[in-house]
Image (cartoon, rainbow, N blue to C red; front, side, top):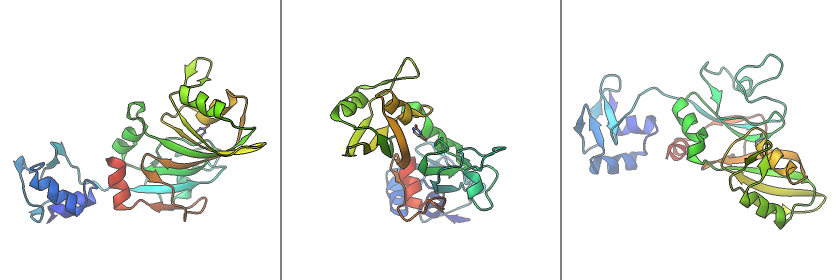
Length: 234
Ligand code: URA
């Protein structure tokens, strides 16, 4: 048995105060009946709790933020290379990386066993922003900014969706920030190649509202906070 508000916090549906507001609005049901208070006791194993008519499963998922180093692959298993899952100490067998970063790309990678959340974040229809820092061989100009905004051709005939390019500094080796909303294979490298420029270094800084923790050293990871999980799901 546990309190309803604790159940909603632990299943990452709401903070305690949000849960209270949701109950006041009549959005929460217990075995089909609307409940207006969240300090009541429920049985997390047998009661059916729904928020906005979505039944909440009590299974506890795991969520980690990894600062991926270069040289490891974004897979669960690999015969040759070390994988991102190998960096997690005693990983549960269902953990997987949400999306892929190239072997030589660094930075934010979400690792979880929550398939629904992964699907939400990766679905092309959801247009989740992914922001990268990159070092580029070549002088990046407004022309490239405009080309990325309009869309460039990669893979022969695919026109990329509007992407945001911000120039930090531009010289023989330029530094930029790029935000894309899709995730084609080698997308950013191919986008620069289409402009005759080469990506020398690439690091993901954020995905949706999840920002890489600047205290996280390369190759290290930490659990997401409850707030980060709730924000990612919203
Ligand atoms: N774009 C790339 O080219 N590589 C990555 O790893 C991510 C985005």
